[in-house]
Image (cartoon, rainbow, N blue to C red; front, side):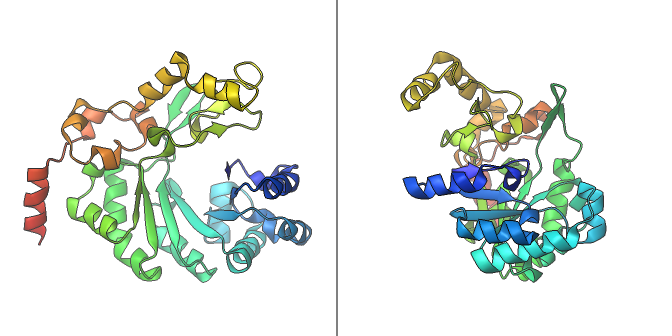
Amino acid sequence: MLLIGGEPTLWAPLLRFNEFCVKEGLESILITNGSSFGNERFWERYRQCPNTKIALSLKASTASQLREVAGVSNFRLIKRGIVRAITEIGAQVSITYNTFYIDNLVDMVQFAVDCGAASVKIDFCSVVFNHDRPDSTYMVPPDKLVKNILRDYPKLESLTNGHIVFEMMLPFCLWPLEFIQELKQKNQLLSVCHLLKRQGIIFDEEGNLIMCNALFDYPIARYREDFDDGQSLLACLNTPKIRKFYDRMGCYPSVKCKDCDWYSECGGGCPLRWSVYKPEELIRPIKKATRRKEVKDYA
C-alpha cells in the first residue's frame, strides 16, 4: 500500500501503522519530501520501524528554490533527511516536473545524484481542482514540456548513467516516435496509471474511496456509509454507480484514439488533463504503417 500526502510523516499514527503492517505481513511505500528524516529524534524513531520502501519526492535543489517552491527555509534539514533516506534505507527519488523546473530540471537531477540517488523517476504535474474548477497553474503546456524534455534528455541520461525513468502522463502521440521507442527499449518508460488499469484503489485519511489522489475532495464512496469491511467494499466497487465512474474516467479522450495502435500502452495520458485541454486539438493516432515508415526514416 502507498502512503501519500500532503506529507505523511506528519501523520501521528505513522509508526504504529508501520508496526501493524509488519505484524500483518503487508508491504507499505512511503512517499515523502524527506524533511522529517532530517530531524534527529524522528529519524531515530523511524529507523526502528520503517516502511517497506521510501519514495522521495524532491522539491528543490537549492535553498532559494525551496523558498520559491514551498515558502520554507529549512533546506539543510531537508537535504540531510534526503541523504539519510537514500544512503541508509535505499530510498528511490522522484521529481514532479512543473513550472518551477522548466529550465532547471537538470539541476534537480544533479542534486539527486549528489545526494546518492542511483536512479531518478520523473513524472509530470497534472491538474488540481480549486473550488470545483480545474487548475493548470503549475502544469507545463504539452508543447513546451515535450520540447524541454527532448532538450534535457541526453544530459539527464548521462547524469544517471541511464537510470532515468519517465512516468508518461501525456499521450505518446505528442512525442517523436523515435523518442518513445528509445525509452521503451531502455526500460525508461512507465505508462497507464492504476486508475486506467483498474489496479489498486485509494482511500483518503478518513477511509473514503477516491479514484485518484488528485481528486481528494471528490470521494466516490464513503466509509461506514457505503462500505465498512472488505466484503461490503467489493460489493460497493461492483455497483453500477462506481462502475460508471470508472467507465467514464477511462473512456477514450478522443475518437481518434480508437484507431491508434499505441492506445493500450498509452491510455491517452492522464485523464484529468482533458479537463483543461481539448483532446481533438492534440491527439493524432499512430498506425502501424506510420510507425514502420517513421522508424525507417529515423534509421
